[in-house]
Length: 141
Image 1 (spheres, rainbow, N blue to C red):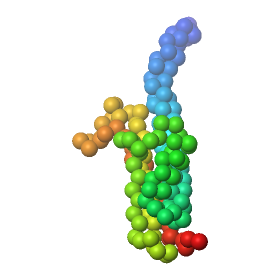
Image 2: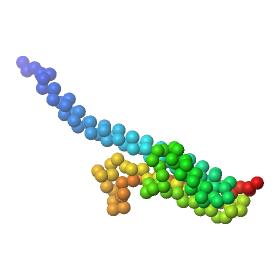
Image 3: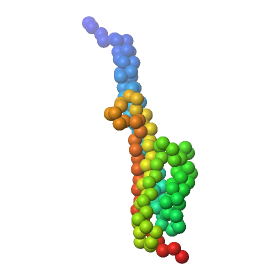
Image 4: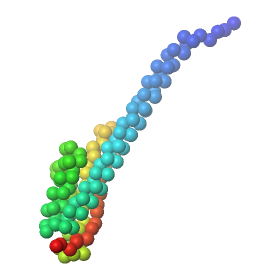
């Protein structure tokens, strides 16, 4: 009679674990990366909204909008400042009530896998996340 021994399957668990663990770790890192990107998207949307809101009431809308983006960014996420990774663009069509103020905030989120998976020549290892808001200038009292 031939008996199947349990000892012959002891190595299978180690082999299966060594095959599945890298895949699970990549999935976990991808989930964390997605969380960073989503957090940055919410932050740039809120920063652009706040900057546009402040600019609609200011005497110098461009300066006030840029100051608002800087203040919001530094208070919300540590390390945000106008450097290589954070940019803001403010366009004001005029200073009269009803003219439009457009604010776009761009933040570059570093990608965990940038050295493993280079996409192309323009690939700089960052995902560019942007948010924009447009509001009209209100009448000042």
